Length: 144
Image 1 (cartoon, one colour):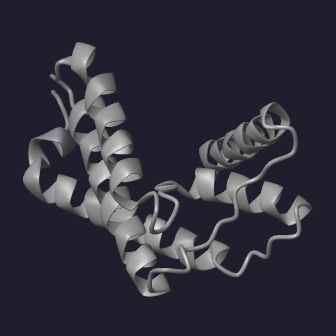
Image 2: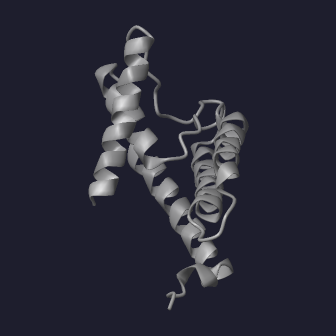
């Protein structure tokens, strides 16, 4: 629980930093009006899944190539942002979604999409964890 709280605080602090740096501008958390909201939610699920799976695969394994994991993770964030940024905004993370929603409230934006985005992002993370556990069972063996 403390880790989740710190992540949410960090996401909110980052959003306020953006707002400060951009002279009060905020980002509305909402699917692009030109797209079906369900498409935005599915894309958030898929790219959150992809990001979480890559993080688990490169940054949490016992014997990995640690000098490359930052590049792999950043590439997923970049690909997700480019692929779905114009559809959903590409937040890909409940902490980022929380920060965007909190600062959006100060600009009069609603939070209707907040719980839906978080639901799909958490589901994407859980699916990634389940797949990682299935394909990397050796990571869960206790060492002697």
